Image (cartoon, rainbow, N blue to C red):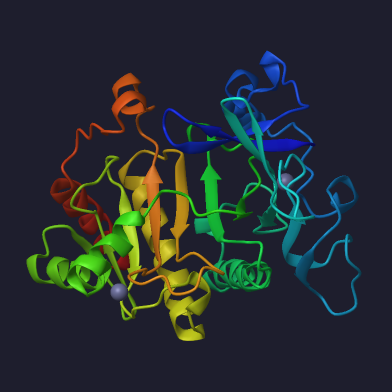
Length: 338
Ligand SMILES: [Zn+2]
Ligand SMILES: [Zn+2]
């Protein structure tokens, strides 16, 4: 599939356009009724063990020693995103046509299938398997960061229709981009102005006030951020100042896997099983020194569909104060820890 990135001159941002693909109305997940396929479980699933030949060729997998790529016997499997608009080929080419500006879709888009089993979700996996998922994401992060054309690596997960998932089988995605998105620019701005890390400062403040602190483990703090855009928005922040997600060590990975399991269990229970997104915010790569970055994970339950004013202004309207959200999530986690 061919794609190009077109510059949105009005908003000073980029949009990815699939130039040769025409989806019919019923090809869109909302019209297809994701929830109904989930309930009946009738649809064929290419991510299931045994269906390896129906996916794009495996990039890598954690698998039993005596098994071959693209066959059963794996625990976590990475494949190129079949519908990806990105290709890590050639160089970045900017094109100008009158007032318009575009560039080729230089990059890579991968899918990490988190389990061979259908219908078992991330939080239902044993913590050891969750760790394997994040170990795979870390490996792929390191590999993609080794390509000088890659400037940013976005790891994310869509769970459920309202989070943008088109397949039910539990998976995460990695998108290696040729430029740095506008998100998180505030981290380097704060560092330039104050000479210290914004997230390290935030960790300290939230630990002291405890108002928005959900849970604290040996290596991570879970908070509802002060300016939460979404109700029950939760950040998982490593307590050790580390710029890149790939800097996470083995002990931290064990801790992260345990926390993700318990947090998602508690969150789904607390909020009546919503769709959610997980995104990992991390420092740019191949950009020289990027001061002030401190990687962190956001978990966003999708309880409300973004409305007109949010598209128009970028100001989110959040009907639940993060102080209240944190209290509810904290109490639920404590129930699970009993
Ligand atoms: Zn499946
Ligand atoms: Zn920091």
